[in-house]
Length: 431
Image 1 (cartoon, rainbow, N blue to C red):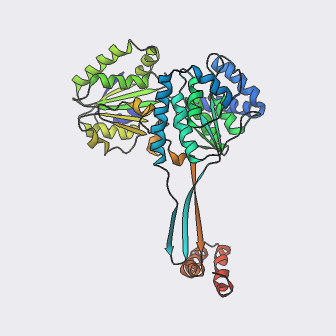
Image 2: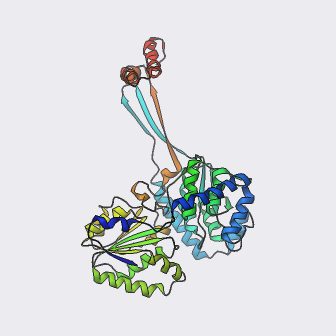
Image 3: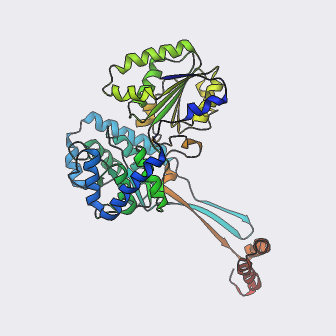
């Protein structure tokens, strides 16, 4: 990891920069993929899967009956773990559902707001170097709870051209009955335009690599809503002299093993502790099956030395990490100073992997500084909030004059007339 001694804000630009491909190179490539799927549907999806994944999918979709048969071989331990995670995620997300708002801001003027589920949502589940069945429950559980009428889950094929059984089980347990096979930018294109087999959706949610993120951004230009920019995974860890070096190293490696386009950031206040963490990294990485991926990620990652935890927090808020781990003696106090982060993990006993799997929070989070303005996936991501208003004759009298005055001063006379006619005819109108 590259070492930076933080002196002042002039160091921030080099700290907050992510190792990402230039967008001017990325978008033309992704645009061609999406156009091909738009024009050639399933055939293009299959061809791109073979080209980019190394194998063509054996099928485009799986139904409930087939999935139920396929998942019989999954171990009871894994089934229990997935079921526990679903229970906790349901509980946390159910608590987020808001009730209808209804008020009377002026006499005779009723205003209301109601949350309505998005009808058709597309859930993208990354595959690539690891099938992320945990992402299935993070997206499918709130989509089902929200009451979305059509939930289209799509994921890349494995080396055998199949959808991994773990993803099938997670989908079934989350309440889904169909899964579609296709990954990368071509999978996003299928959700954007629809194909012979895959329905077009109104909103696309889910994490992915830079190509997936670029495809989602292009889908947005086509009128399809997206959850957030959720690209390569990242973590920032703030560690003080009391941090457990082994824990911190394990947390850094848990993100570093995601993929070579990921990044980790260690912000420390104590040189001795930073050396201990480095030693632990060298020790633990040897035993990881994905050690080569982790090594590549670490080579593009940073260690930043600061004078105290307040300075460390200032850097973290500028970095706006997807995941923020507070491995300090004052972790709870420091948590109150967080302004930019996707999800925060407080104290020595809270690894980032808890949130990735089973704590109950959602692990689909904004990356690449998008946490400065975006939230992670929550129940609101699957809802749209519609406002309602109703005026009685008393309401027309309450706000009519103000409406007319404002409309006239914006030189929108038809707006003013619409209210003036009602004022003129109040006696003849039913309240």
